[in-house]
Image (cartoon, rainbow over all chains, first blue to last red):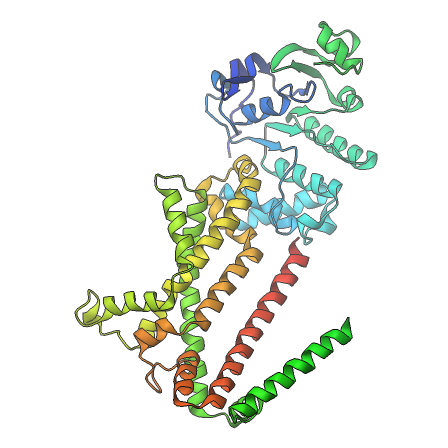
Length: 239
Length: 255
């Protein structure tokens, strides 16, 4: 098996997205570098989720374009954990198996991969349990494990620990840090400033559909350049 | 509360007894039990044929209707709305009309006349399939459409296109789809018009529970007719109980 072609960096060039004439994202240019942990920040409705769905290829931009390094339109080596991940009405193991079956992996390989993932993410005891009946934290771990099984070079995480308690949040963050240590590029959104500080290497700050700041996390948290970002970090509610 | 129900039950039974006496009937429950206990060959044959015809029709309707309903849920093509409306309307298709259509197709001068299928169980299966198909298609479409609105983005993210989503959605909707299949079974096992027209109610050949009831009623054998009705109800009840149990088990098991 040859090493997969690198798909990163991903370049967004003047990307815009509008619905019924209303611009939800406008003129957004951004380079997502390989191997980094990028946190997308901004208020509700700033376009964070939209940006990730565009990058992941779930929706197409109304203007501008995305350019993956391997030249493909939508590379396979990527995965996303949606804000409300949908687990299939099947067992945990079958949920993990599903994307592998879609890719045409042979059944014995799939079984081995699923078994490895179950033990690696501490889901071993849950393999036969119906995925829909797990607790919120367990479901989120299954969703992350399923995404990781897709062998992504880049992983999009939309609010991966929203509505989870602190201990479940810590487990999720450990998983994310583990993926990052393996060299998987992480792009995530979060409303939890503490989490952003813990995980971010780079920060993109969106305000009303525009990219307002993009830089290293250290710089962003130490001294945001724009009044919008300053107000956001200060916790002001403003529109 | 409980007493009220018991009261109602007694008054119903009392009323029922009076009806029986008025028509000089033996107790039909006893007749039904007696019929079953005697293992009457003709009766067993009628029951077997009824089940065979209806269950085969259900199977065929599912084999065609489940993928068709899912395709209708996910597909986007001109005239889709019209197709959906037609299938919804056909859920109310009178069995006699379905029977008439099949009769015209299979009668000697009809397009399928040379096959010589009229007045055979095959013709009855065909007619009942036509009755069940709209129910299976419409319910499948509605179940799959609802699931798709929940699953679409996730499945696309995992790499499943619309076509590959069809088996996924059918499988994940299996508990709800079972209800649709049961409704189809109920419609087919209860109808008399279609099997009577295309089957002809030939003793030992195309006589089913419902056509036998029709015949016995017109002959004045009301006791036997009611007994057959009780057996038919019992069969339907048993099948539904099994399916409901399976559904409950799956719901608990699969969430």
